Image 1: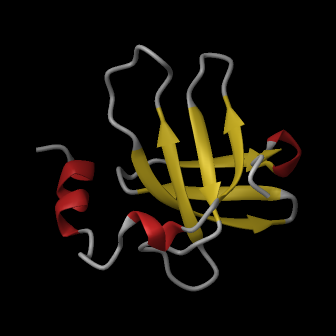
Image 2 (image 1 turned 60 degrees about the horizontal axis):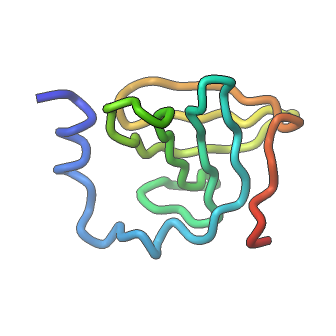
Length: 98
């Protein structure tokens, strides 16, 4: 079993889709993969907010949840599969819903 699948099994039952709040911003790669940042916490703690990585169209991998914080103009993201990433804030596109 993949580690992130195990994390999904351990995800608290109270962490539902409504807990992650509204989409705040998105960053996309040239291949079509994207990370969406949300206003709610989900399973994140402290100042961290929920994030979701989504694969490019046609990629069979599953989306991976994570948590993000903004510091010094860079979004720091830790994903539940153990990966992490840094996204310069200037690359974010604000969600249309805001």
